[in-house]
Image (cartoon, rainbow, N blue to C red):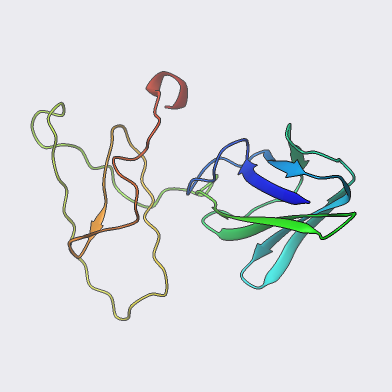
Length: 165
């Protein structure tokens, strides 16, 4: 038995993606008797669901409530004849309905020309992890201390302002 191509709402999870409602889909080779879905936050289980659907290509809806700006690990485990199969993905939820705490920044001069923004700040101690959230029109790249943050180039990759703004 084998599970692969685990997706959320039929997409590879992107930081901050909309998960309301959340539908998991995957491809499975082999026959399973039970599917176990587990959602983890840090080291504790926050949601479990069992299903006897033999294949979740079209998707299995989860009825769990996820907190904003939180990282989750999601596992799908299939059990049946032979060795069990398991696939894991990670999801970082967006702001959801929590308010933005920031100011709008716009391009100086002609907004049709490329531009750079820079912000300097100091921290009392280095955090274990930091998250950059943005909302706006156009493509961007983020650098921290002169180094690219993450491995994305010109994000967001797909944008249709007619449908998503």
